[in-house]
Image 1 (spheres, rainbow, N blue to C red):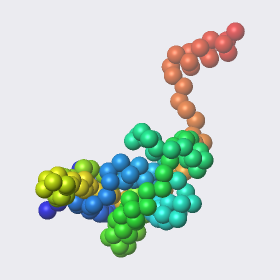
Image 2: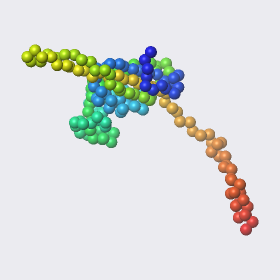
Image 3: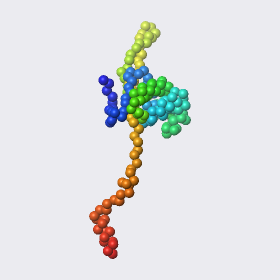
Image 4: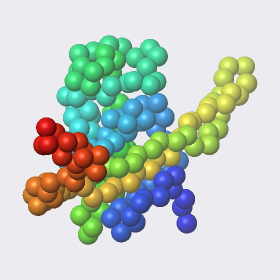
Length: 180
């Protein structure tokens, strides 16, 4: 059994999706994942498709060393951004998996999404003069939880209309004012 980093409050109203040892860069995957968190599934899918088409940008807020400036991240209140196509496609596949898991329950909000580093894998590359150097790959683990959108219930009018009880001290003060 796979262990997730976060257990949902109500397991009947949530579903999970997970990918292990995915061959995609960590820094490029973390940023779109954070941009998706808390969004409705339809909006997140549309956002990732627009990122692959370079119509919307992913704001690079944490790992932003050497990231160029562009105009599109202004809607996020940021100036640095990129369009990580491969990471967006991996996240789209994961979102599709989570969507198929959530079909029966009717879940639609991304509550939790996390990208972790996986153990590095070592290959070899052949160099000049018969030497061999390591050729490392940096895979990732990703996990996602979907929940039901909470509906805001308005207060009943009866409770709002009820008068507040006055304190005994306030009642005595009112009586004193009435005598004078």
